Image (cartoon, rainbow, N blue to C red; front, side, top):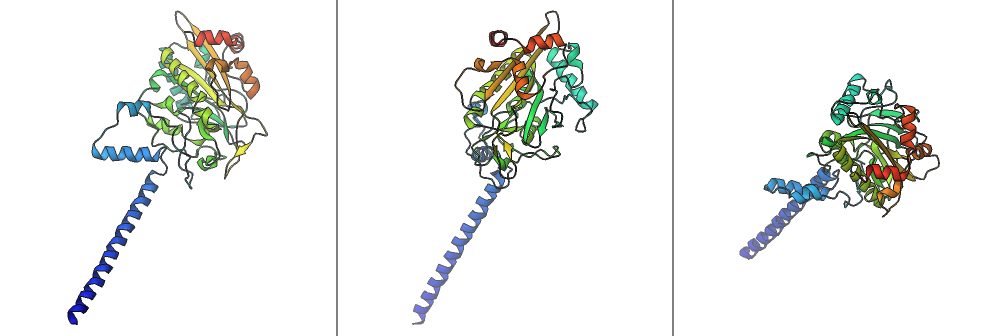
Length: 367
């Protein structure tokens, strides 16, 4: 009888002990999963980031194909509650150069000096006189929108519509190549905007991508500048297949031209107006009907050359060639109320801005 009691007590103890160990393992596993979620939830592609970290711990490097052929547009729509994560936005430095150098957000002489140095690198130190003027690259118009200067680009931000009015920067050939990666970058509100920007969560389940205006791919040479391209002041709602399709193709084409020509000036942004539809949880973010890019190339020397081209694209998918979206820059000025590169001589400005599509296509695509 006593022996039978000992056996039963032993069995009860064993069952209790087993249950305790099982619960402990489940609890530890739960803490581990929560830790993983908190660590990777803000990554552009959390699964890819986790796998890369695992391979790094195991000493397995990334393949060349993964480094060069990575597609950032396959990530699903994020579900982050705190708004700190990113989704499938376009690739994405706008130079610190603005029409009003005395603006409160200006970085002053240091910023102007760095812009001049960038231009000199692009042109081997030979600049047209209008290129030497302070903030020559920045459009005029919409001066009620806040002027924001970052290391890689300058912009005006519309606080009411929660969109950039324009984003401007010089794109130099050496800036396009480098080791900077977008995988671990997050979309973040821009703390330098007085009125506040849209939040990443304003885009969640909206059906729209967070579309870079200055693309991250233009800042491969600097992780810091690439990080700044994810600030929400540089972001505008774009239809997913537009963002990942024709808009991405245009960004890649401009980078190819920058490599070919040594460097360009780029101004880009949405076409804004009152009455646009909106998205957003915390903010009403206007969804633009269309987007534009204006590109200028200058070379002073024995054979001086100046070229300008404009693109105007509807915010929708398209399989048309890029040449079909080429328009006179004067057309973009009428649509936006802006004036681009107005510090160059008037006769030259008029000639460049009123060229026909065939002239611009021949100058840019056929070279």
